[in-house]
Length: 192
Ligand SMILES: [Zn+2]
Image 1 (cartoon, rainbow, N blue to C red):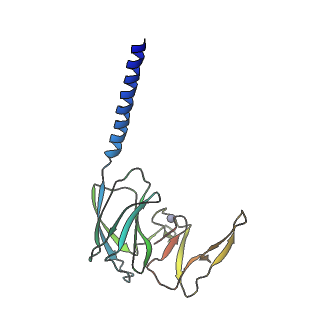
Image 2 (cartoon, rainbow, N blue to C red; image 1 turned 90 degrees about the vertical axis):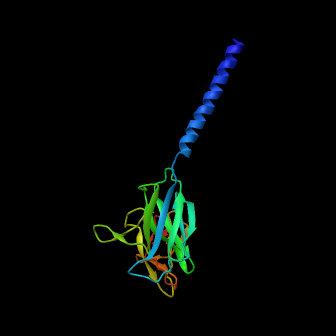
Image 3 (cartoon, rainbow, N blue to C red; image 1 turned 90 degrees about the horizontal axis):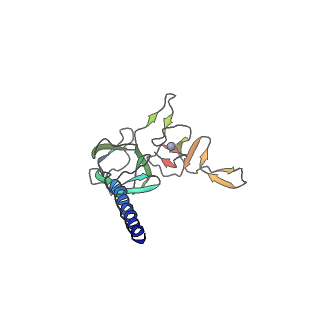
């Protein structure tokens, strides 16, 4: 009887290890995805630099990869997708505020050649309103207003806390430094 228990325990032990290895194996089998990116100026606004700009990919609030563009605005970035809802491409650099340039939900293959624009190309809904690249909705999108004195509005929440928001009369007030971002999504806290 004692011998049988020992044998059973050993069997359970080995199966557990095999099962864990199988699960981990499946995780490691997720293919890395490489993006050969070309950062370009938007024909409507070519004030931003595309060279030596930091490009990073964010998903589920985590930065998955970060790279610096070369003198032509080209870059190569590799990520290992798990089960993220979307892969959000941002760029930032000297005199450039963090800017959302694209949001991708799936990749067509292991190597993808993609063009990105600063500022990103705007998409509008059927009503002609600009939609956010991440949530694809227009309801929390505000036009960014650049001015000398940003207007700060005061909000008092249900809990009685006072919060200050740069949103004012449906626009998002920015400082006097004019950036390439034209819109801001309050849902995703992203400028694009
Ligand atoms: Zn959004």
